[in-house]
Structure formats: C-alpha cells, structure tokens
Length: 256
Image (cartoon, rainbow, N blue to C red):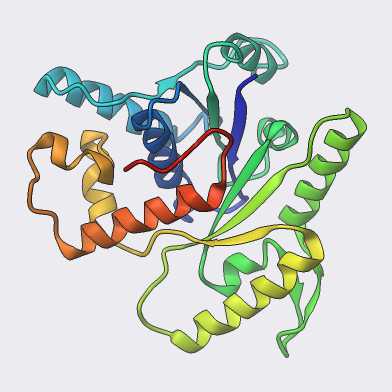
C-alpha cells in the first residue's frame, strides 16, 4: 500500500505548496513512484506547480523526475475513490490541503501516515496549535491541534496505524532571534503534550518564488544548466536534505 503524506494546516501563506512540491520531487528523484492530490480546488497551487513543470519539460526537452498529479473523483466522496485508484500505482501519495478547514481536508488528515504542518515562525501561526496566556504560558490545544486529535482517534477506531506528525518551522528569518527562541521553546513544550515532532523547514528565500513559474525545485538546477549555485541555493538544498532525513519515511535513504 502507498504511504500517504498529508501537508496541511488551516492558515494560508505558510509554504504548504512549496513544501509539497519539494518533498514529492525529492522522492521522485530518488526513484520512488509518487502521486499527488491537490485538495485546494480553488487556488490549486500544487497542481499548478506540476503543470508548470510538465510544460517546462516539454518546452526544453529536459527529462526531469515527475510526480503525477491525479484528479479527484466525482460524487459526494471525491477523495476515497481517487486514493483507491492510486494505491497500487505509487509508493507515496502526497496530498496538499487548503489553508482552511474543509470536509476534504479533514478526511485527508484521517488518512495520513505522515502529516507535515508547515508553520511560519510566529505566535500568530502558533495560535493554530495552542492557546497562550499573555505571559506566554500554553493553556491548551487550539483548533487545528484538536482536528488532528480527532483524526488520530478515528484512525485508532478503524485499526489504522498512528499519524507521524511533524511541525515544520518554515520561513525562518535571520532577524528577531528573541522571538525565534520563544517560539521554539513553546513548540518544544507543546510537542510533548500533544504529540508531534518539530523540524526545521525552509528559510525565507527569493529562489522559491523564482522556481514556481518553471515548475522547478532546488534539485533541478544542475539539470537545467545552472552549474554555479549560489550560497543561498546550496543552503536551501541542505535544508531540503535535512527535512527528508527528518521525515524518516519508509524505504527512503537521502541520495541527493
């Protein structure tokens, strides 16, 4: 059976689609069969990213590893039939969720073997996970953490395995070190209470915005003639390598 990776939270602008694209493409580059589903039926950022990649491959004649985007089924339950069709065809299925609470997103969370939650490094985004007092004390889980808890309960009742939940500290900046320490400390404390692992994600870099129109990722630059990588690109590539290692996916050894 395919291993299902869900990338989700309930807030836009945290880098979900960038994370989805880089994880899916990294797995494809390592020889795994990777399928994708984009549940954000309005913006479709993940699907658009792959469409841009397909167009670039055709236009430039470059054979880049390609995750395959599938379509949702018709009817009241568009997700389950799509996953049934994909299950035997792929090693990994990556599902990118919208930045809001929807029925499809909630259903996807119950199916996740691995859940990746990108989070901007601020207490505005932290509020999705937990409520805090003005003094900085964690008072209890918030809306998104409660939704993940409900998904875990449903999986347990169905006899499915646990969700490996990774909270990704995304868009880390070089400034505001005091705030970063406070957010990091709050996440470390909360992770023990509600059961997730904390991983460093991607720093805020211009390169990610530049790659989207061509559907490229950091791992494709040498294939398209960019022999001299900048220090920022090298650092970003290492961040991706660290993330794939941290995910600890079955049968995956980092080879890029």
